[in-house]
Image (tube, rainbow, N blue to C red; front, side, top):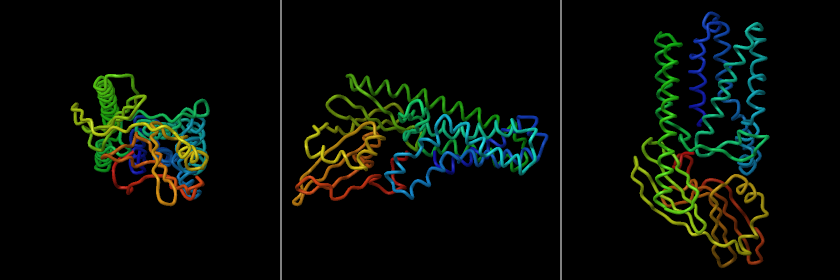
Length: 319
């Protein structure tokens, strides 16, 4: 999810920690938990520093090792130790560690629920996993948790407030997961052939997009409630010698390590060729906004390439 959502959930988790009597009756421990859950809710995304080494490096490693199974245990330990020293809460380390661990788990779990995905099973499996249930920013969850913080600030009991906030959140996510499952089955039945289907969330909760891959092509379209509308069909092209000439460059290797529904096209220019690799999962409004564009000369030597989003950061799709 986005940084703001992770941080607000870190704050509300500190409020939920008041269901723990040890936290509720020790103000200094409660303060340490607040600091710890705020840091823990964002810690796995500290790998964004990799952007300084270039977007290709960032795509290759973001949401990887820092979101892996070992990291789920290492991040809480790394955060808990200095907080125990700062607040002198050595006897309560299990409570502090436990709530920070919950913050890290929530971060990775929420990332798993969106369409971008996460390598959360490393080192046992490096596959990108995504459940496609939530957009990277979910307005309902954000404002629900913000409302809970407002009630806490107004003096309401945080244990009661956030028990309800988290119960509603779990119910909402479960409902969206169930709805998503129904939509995937509906889209596959509409296509009526053996296929791989992704139904992807929109900021507006009742709207979705879909991508269906068959042996010959990709079908794309939109869903409003349960009304499905097919929009574009992308035919798969054979990977000729022009396309093959781009597969050794760093940007394409990075893209192929991340992308799942891969579509590639090429066209000829006066001075060479252009090859466009795209991930159809991120189809939006008759465009394929995520991929890598490679420029070749007449001898099929790479002149230049660009990897990333062919859109402005605030434009859809939001993943």
